[in-house]
Figure 1 (cartoon, rainbow, N blue to C red):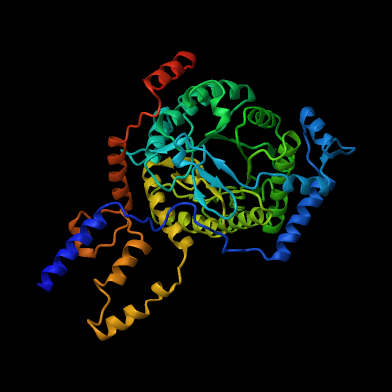
Figure 2: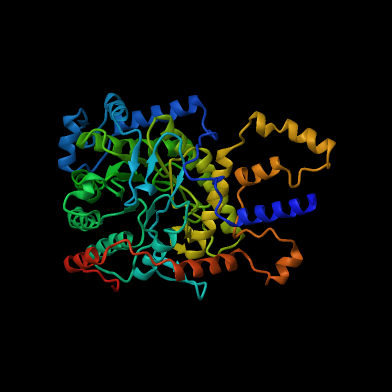
Length: 507
């Protein structure tokens, strides 16, 4: 009789494991910040150098409209025409900045809160090539790829927000490209999304499209579910006029922003890591002061992205240990200042889904997460030093992120988890912990079980076709793309958008 009960209990446990877990052991938004590559003295030295650069060197090529607004809040133009920021003004901009804010999804259940030490993985990039599912070779990215990537990631739990990962190279007109990119986001996902605007004049029309999806004129700005990626600073230490104009338009339409500094060590910033961090921090602080001068406290992700090149060849080194270290340090600096941090990781230089791919993605993404990067960009799907995007990479990276969140969650030490009674019972009883209630409770609560990583023994693996990670990910992508065809725009909304805009994707 007892054997029958044990067998029945085993069947119930197997059925529960096949069902969706009642408790997710590794959800997004875990707390980071345990990894601190910089000491307190080093943080102060980097910050002080950044303040000195802003106060004495300042920023060049400042558009006149911005110059007037900066001077109105206390910036000073020097004899060389550069605009300098007194330390007092920088501190004021930091103090009055938005420390946390919501990134809304059109589905409110998918909204996330940005700030503090909470970690979220998301996407970014502007890949001009896609790793083809059939040929396993790169080809130019298309509008169809953009739609397919968007609906694929819509199924992935660990992509907390979605920025277009590829550029539709078959859409040559910049306005049509911006419009059709925004449409792909609206059609295929209800997560928080992000895009870029080539010119400021493109913002208002696209907001009209967003209003249609939101339910009427002005509705988007009441609850913005799209943020803008803007690079208003061109390294070293100068403004970019077109991007600055986009900033003004985004603030006018209440579009949150990631103001991205993307200097390259040894090229557009010092090769020394400390010097790089000081200049990059100064440039991102200049973006913060700009936003402060236009509208104090406007939501801005402090996106200080250190990029590394191979100094022997000039090739991008997105998967390097230096990239991992610098992005972790950047996240630490931003969080130390109390600013919502954005960094980049998972920028593998590998072209194939191979050992180099896994090694580089694992070390860079884990370092950024452990350091507490709030929004970790480029973290899903990117390959080939950001030149490429891969469907298989998206699903593999999603599983990697679950493991990273499990690491961040840490070890819960409690009377129950210490397991004194379970140890005594097992030692004096059956001599093992298999099948015990304490083990079963931990199994469902504390462990993540991957669907793509292979844990079988060699014979079973060989009998199953000796598939590698690329093969398994390929099959999963095929299944998801065949079955997930969301309709997040009503027929009426889609028709209205198509009437007013040149939508190139078939209805």
